[in-house]
Image (cartoon, rainbow, N blue to C red; front, side, top):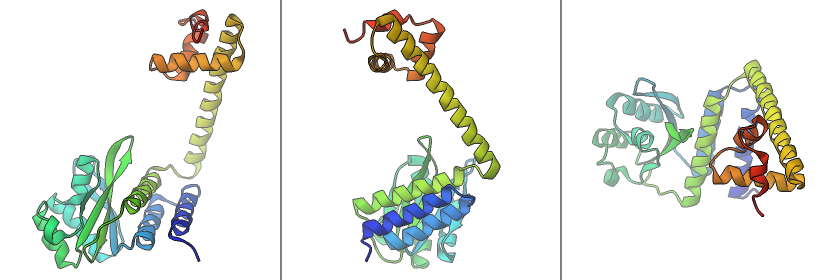
Length: 243
């Protein structure tokens, strides 16, 4: 019999498998919503994303209760999901009867639908919240720290599902990134060779000195390597590092 940890690992493995195949973003999002029900015991879930015009748009909902709660937040511009996006942080009410005063209209409507607790997890992209995964419970509920980490991990997978490129363009982008990575590695290796030759040190030591200069100057390793190979940074200046 699977332990809860094994169950979570299996579900995450299944979702990551979807990310590498031809499944679209909504398929991934619905898999995340299903996983939330299985491992966290949610009674309903939904996803809202930030509209470029400043509003919110509903992406998915597990059932009519979640659909109602999500669309309500869109229309009244009030609710835990909006706050979690603005604050870029988890926003929750373990019991909407006591903790819903922050959103009185939303809380009353959610309670009328039989939803008594809500947790809104930020969907982050490049450190900004671009949406939220909303977990609803029909009873007052508190999530443990471990459950919150699991929920945020599933939320992050939902972001990947919605932002991934599909089919041929994904393959083209992968090829482009691979070529870029190989080119960048070649530039770094060239700089290492130049430094090793000028300083009479082994390549591993030369790499360490490039890395040390990168850290002390707050530059990327590639930027330092380009400076060396381009001549704007004398390799002899780096030869003294560590001596």
